[in-house]
Length: 402
Image 1 (cartoon, rainbow, N blue to C red):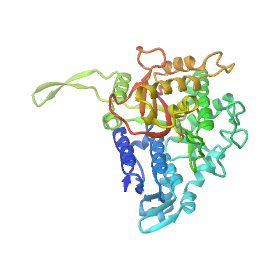
Image 2: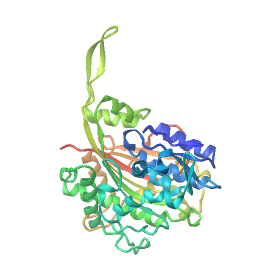
Image 3: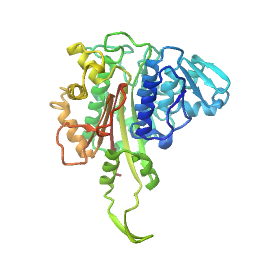
Image 4: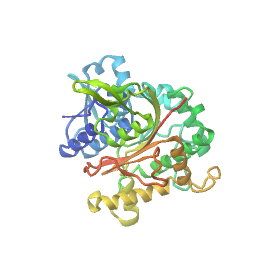
């Protein structure tokens, strides 16, 4: 049996992915909750990891949860209020709670109220805590939720059935308000418009390209969606939890907080220490899917490559850059030109932290820095080799200054 980590650290999540690939076919155990609510992309990337587990499993995909899930409605509701757990319950074929085996259809009854809330614009009820998600589940009766689709069916790149970019602006504003009261009023109208345009383009890409693998075979299950959440880093303990083993995020948050050094008495006289962390609020917006991944879909369409093992990491990185630059671009009149440069300028204004996890890559760009003006993502974990993950999560996080 393999277990999704309960600590919100990417080192733990990447180890989980390695275990999934090294020991395929194992039962999957989910925690009732994860630390810090699974913020800073953890929950969305966890859905990718769970989808990877499902795709590699040749037998009955069995999910193990707390024994109380079998009988206790509070436990069921609590678990189903987390994005990673929704993914686990959806991809599983059987759920085991203690000594009881629960059919998939019965287990998914816990998720149904969350999906109805997504369908009915009741965004505060979609997830537990200061978080909102709109998810589309392949082959589900309510796959094409009306929050995201004008017509309840899949379109094509040229005839999309997804709601317009202007409608996405309204949707994003409502999602922001649902998870962080007043957030949409803190941002300028132009900033919300640009963010909505970017989310719209990324979700359109997910809608078209995540139904099948790189060879065109339809998936039996898949998720695509958008998550918006408020992240509060209240004190030094929370800061330490979030940045554990993550130099890129540590540098970003430290720079934003302008934490200077102070001299304090120590065991050996005066010692230099960082000032205490001051409570700060951030907004995180993620678009995620469980398709073949940005690079693989791109390479399959253009060069007939259907496996990551057929290319090296540099080729994969180049394909991701080309793919992202295409799908983050728009010819919308409201954007008046190429959408990517405008989106990049908006992220610099917001001092955002961008993260992209797809295939064998974990990329980031720190827009609080004046060092980069274009799209130039870096490897988030240096030279560390990462396990292959299905799908993609694109996430931006920025401080909310009220």
